[in-house]
Image 1 (cartoon, rainbow, N blue to C red):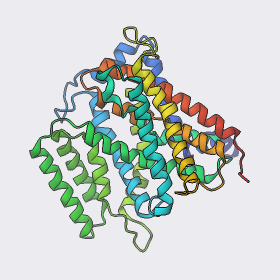
Image 2 (spheres, one colour; image 1 turned 135 degrees about the horizontal axis):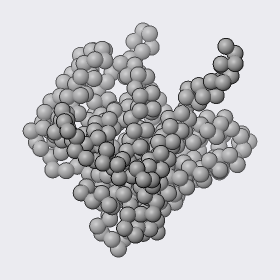
Image 3 (cartoon, rainbow, N blue to C red; image 1 turned 90 degrees about the horizontal axis):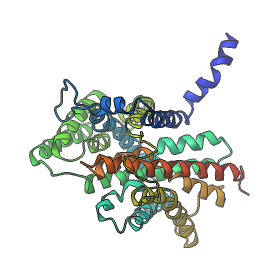
Image 4 (cartoon, one colour; image 1 turned 45 degrees about the vertical axis):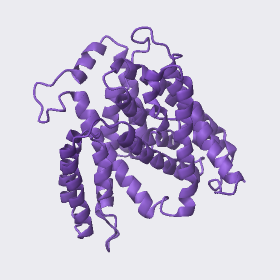
Length: 392
């Protein structure tokens, strides 16, 4: 029995750790890359993109659409739950504690977009991709941070998590405002009515999770047909779930978040990575990593995020707007800012929205996303490993 524990202990410890979802996502991204550069590339593409023989929802007629518009709604639902929890009772509930992460997140979205637009300034057809390098992948970044170990001050982890959550909220707003097709008013009205019912359930004191899940499904269906991207329904639905604690210090939001975190981290996001991260390294028609699109994305993630996040922290401290996270030195801050450049999941998602009907451009964008994310992860990990375990 003891021998069994010794054999399975490291794996069990990894799967139970904060790093696990990020590690699984990295593995799926690597597998997607391997498939895309193998003899199975065409067959895998057909599996993802060929029309299904039958589908219960006509708008989702491929495996790829079911993953990106269906399963990813679960991802955004979990994001919405995390955002509400942080705003109500977490790091974003205190105006003094949320000031610096919000400033850093906004600067960390603006600067990558500026870098991207500068790199693509002579190619107006690429300007729609300005938001691709603006997002941070929570699972990937937190996975890298967890793999570094306890030498990183807890304040760095909390700050990175908070910045990434605000970043995700900004990305959701960008998707809703800038990547929404023509709106069908009838379906949008139906979605609005469902959302009002969910708000009424919350205000009426309904604390069972089943009604919220059922209505969330209906809301997703209505939004899917409205022209607004379906995943927005996940965030909207999550914001209606009650957070108020009962006598047992429990709530519907906490129960749903606890139930969905593992499926989201080990199924939904890895499947998305597997379906979207594959790109032929040699390119599809002469593309180069130094072409304006991949170069702009990679530079936005690697340079823009560091300049935006680190610059915002240092400037806020210098101007007396907010103090840096407790117990941190320059290497901690620089390493954390570098990890914010891991855009992977959100960047891949936005790339698909930015260039609808142009899969060849979206494929080229993946080169920049992967390059920028990998470089950011390596630099961030190196800096945090070199940083002192404790700041004096």
